[in-house]
Image 1 (cartoon, rainbow, N blue to C red):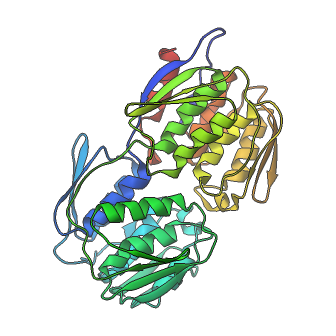
Image 2 (tube, rainbow, N blue to C red):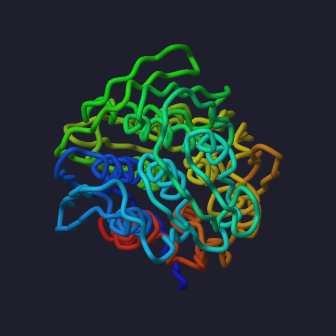
Image 3 (tube, helix red, strand yellow):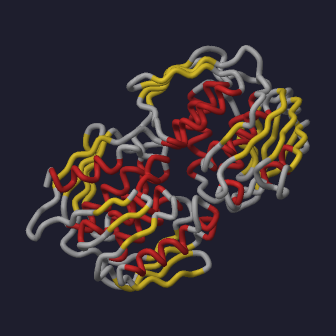
Length: 426
């Protein structure tokens, strides 16, 4: 699908109010924790998108009952953990589902075949599989070792201790921590430092605590989870998705306009909300209101130099904002973006370059020295974050088309309607 972006008219000022979908990160975790709970759970304001439906579908295949309603989803855990499905569990292009699910399945008994898209088959699983190997989990690789497709046969987590290398993805660590309460005995989870995107681990730990799980921090890189424990049945309202909000905050930043987004509040679980701090450094004004935040863009944006290792999903958004700023900006320490839905560093450099922007691609980041000068046909690389971030260019520059615009269904099915409303409400 091709989406043609209509730029703001000369003199047109952006003033918009955007209702955010539920957080993708929180929805994934809530669904999986509900499948481990001691009774039916209700999740309000969940994100219903391609990725979270893949998680729900996988949980259904192993015995959970999941019922979606207009503004909520109900999860009834299976009586037996787990049912062995007769068909492979198809995980599409969802890395989050794959990593969290692998450990979740290891927390029970059964045989499971996991597979996914061609791109998902290129995304590494070896660190997690190596950690699970000492926990009564047998893995048979059906093609390349350390990647999908694979067969898992599990007898349940035995407890003891595991060590994980989460330098490429915090999801390996979140997966082990989330499933550890179901082990037969206490499980100590240790990890190497540094951890990429550690704020996502904090989301996992906060939700574990909220739903009745106790743990003890032994060291900077070790946590003891007493086991067995059971997640208590819960009702939980998912906060608005800060990653999805970022595109609208950026729209205000690059146009000098004003956008209100909600529901989101100070102290949100998601580390991506810290993008607001970066935008403030560049000259934006950020005002928290009840159940939302308003961002006002400045007359001129300033450049910045940031280590974005802890919020890598914000790199596409911030790269576009930096392209419209004065001076040279640098984004550092995000080499792990090369194993996302696409090689995001290469895609950003190439696609922004099509518009005349001056972008240098580094092994672990980007240097942005000049902004877009003309329209272009932008390839989303089947990556939702590339599609949504590059659409922002079209607010300022005529002639921008997003090819592969349907990629947004992965995390924000209503994105194009919300994006079109920016101009309609200006």
